Length: 211
Ligand code: Z5A
Image (cartoon, rainbow, N blue to C red; front, side, top):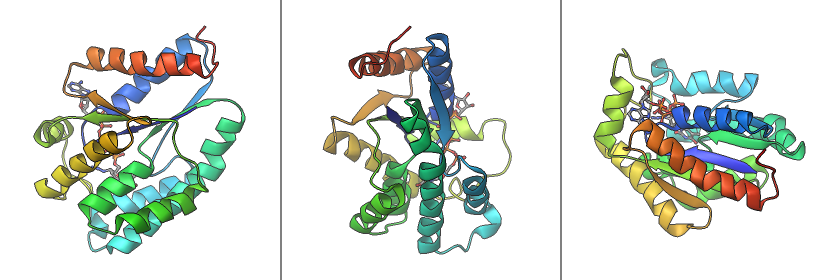
């Protein structure tokens, strides 16, 4: 089972992936928690290049190629081996973020990005994607609270982040079987309960014992 967590900035993906990971631990379900860009030593080094605000002049095609280079590394050296071992893989962002940020946000061609995603992943796609949705300004406020400095993506303007959110909502509509909408503006415990109510029955249907 390969489950991805997606959504705009500050939606609580990292918080919820941690909570689901701990729930799977308590139930004795073998799993790996990982994230993009990153997830391996090499992919983490590419991540540092991508987020560094010193690279503000990076061309969008360079950004796409780096993102996808990190992804192919991550898929082949971490995600696929874990899936082969029968582990559940929980991944914070994946291919849909490329459509949202580089496609809807940076206006790169969506068909090209889909082809490149397929190339970078060797055709691997998630069994389930949870889209954590909330108004852009609420996400901004959460992320900026008690923090100084913004990374390259956080510095993009309001219109960019509205377009990113729109992409995720369009994906929920276009692929209802794979992509499920979660109201991320609810309190953390409520969101965690919804996540568990979506994920656990699916694991059971796939024959994974829930302990
Ligand atoms: N990117 C891309 O452009 N193309 C791609 O293909 C991929 C990625 C894969 C990675 O940044 C950037 O890469 C990302 C897209 C781009 N850029 N942006 N923007 P990252 O990994 O550093 O950041 P992120 O993935 O965007 O995560 P985030 O925005 O920092 O936040 P989050 O993981 O969704 O939320 P969180 O860290 O769990 O929570 C944020 C705060 O809210 C924190 O203080 C929590 O305690 C609080 N929180 C969480 N849940 C709640 C609830 N329910 N209520 C109130 N407060 C809450």
